[in-house]
Image (cartoon, rainbow, N blue to C red; front, side, top):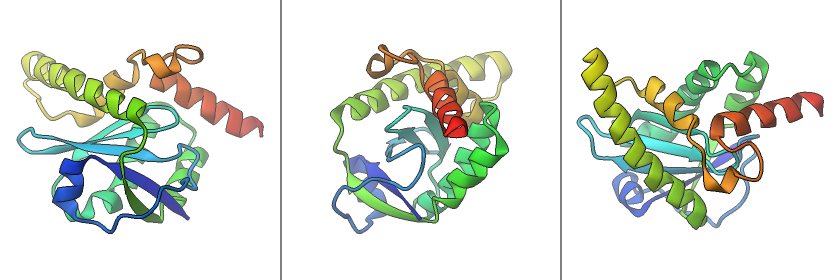
Length: 171
């Protein structure tokens, strides 16, 4: 089982992985896109190509980012109220990673927009709570954002996620 991680050039330069030809992931959430947020400490932003679900996590150590990603995704999915069976299947399917360059400009645009919004939420949480590193809460806030690629359907990543989970449960 495998998932595909499409990384921005800045992230690829940091982790220096072997790049493979684009192919589809074995996961329900599909391929993932990732970039770096140059915060202190640095953070990685991952976005599902299919649902646009955002996941923020610490970047360091960058070499183990893909290995650590499934457990952070599991936390985000649990926070979204996704059934534990779906979470377990998704994490199980993420046994191996294949790296690729970004290929979907629409998802790259969403990454850029989420970076801007994440910086806003980072400042807001720091101001309100004195807690500037609540990556799970910021991920949840980003997931509520209306995204133009989803306008004809679920509108926001959190709703797209729940539709995907519901469709999988009925299949």
